[in-house]
Every structure is written in C-alpha cells, then in structure tokens.
View 1 (cartoon, rainbow, N blue to C red):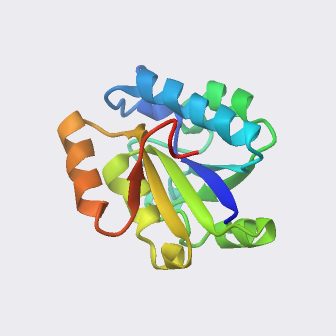
View 2: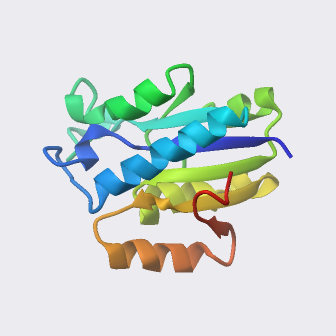
Length: 171
C-alpha cells in the first residue's frame, strides 16, 4: 500500500490567541510534528489541508481569508515545506477540492489522518464517500477538539468505520 499523511486544519485560529482555541493544542502539535518527521523518513507524502471559510456567506467566526488565523501553523509549514496544500471550505476534505486528484497522482491507497477538529473535519474526511476506496486510519494522539470528552466520543463513533492508531505504531 502507498500511504499519505493528511494534516487537516492545523491552523492558527485553533491555538491560544486564535478565534477558536481548542484543548491540548500544543501536545497535539508536537505529536503531529513527530508524525510528519516519521512520514518524511519513510518516504510517505504529507498533504496539508487548509480550511478557508466561504466568504459568500459573510464573515465566519474563524478561518477568514486574509487573517492570520486562517494560516497553517508555522511549525507545520516549516516541518513540511514541500507538502501539497489542499484548500477546502467544507468539513469533508474531499468535497469540492482537488484532494482525490492529488492522491491519485501519488498512487495513494492508504490515508493516515490527523488534525483539528476531531468530531468535525477529521471524522467527516475519514468517513467521506470519497474516502471509501482508501484504507483509512486516524492518528488519535494527533487530533484534538474543544474538549477531551468530545474528542473521545468522536473517535469512538468513527471506530466502526476506520482504524484508530497512535504514534509511533501508525507509521
């Protein structure tokens, strides 16, 4: 199988000082950086998913284009400077994006997913209709949301459809 690591929405608005800070972001960032380094060491491509709010619906609470909050965290950008970047405006990273094309061009058959928010963009991407043709794993220690309990509930809910893994076993 040919793997890819999807890093979903690790953007400034989710960190302290952003418009919608989540819990445990620094630990999740550190784990995600470990996952990126492990992926690079094994030749696994890293794909960064970046959410930009659809401005046609008016200003959003966060991820507004042109703000510092919409930017991918600088540590992620520094760790994977050559990563493909897929822009989305829906929770499902496949919906109305070029993600399938990027994965197809790389010959990917297995997706390792991490990011923010567990119960929204991570799980919606993992159980997307478009993801059904891939073997999908969520790196549980590389995800977070607004609370630990919501993170755990979301992982339990999706566990019947995807594999849940932790570092370092997943890569």
